[in-house]
Image (tube, rainbow, N blue to C red; front, side):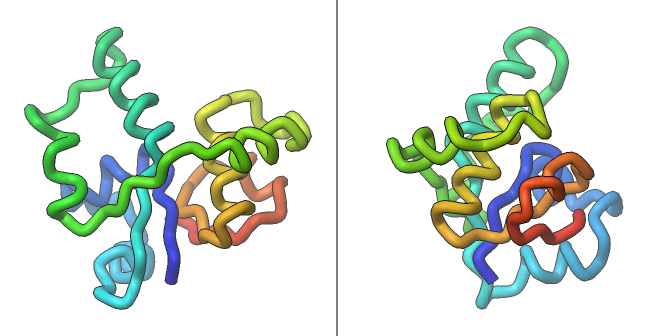
Length: 125
């Protein structure tokens, strides 16, 4: 599988939380899976940490690539697709994940029910 993790899923996957469904945790841990984290998600978590809405472990971002997560840049194609999306969801970070999933053929791993309205491949967290 080619998976793109929503911000909450990334946090749950890295802290070994029991909030993830076992099937979802298995899909993320499967050595055959390619697991991506968007730079937009890194930016979102960084903003939330900076304004005090979220507390990240020290050096959280330093461990993503060694833990097998591939960083996905935001491309011009992603932004172009983002512009065409209906406003089912108003969060720009979630909308860019929808665009990246659609453009790159990725399954978005999320628990956000609004994202299902976009018709992309979803794996429920």
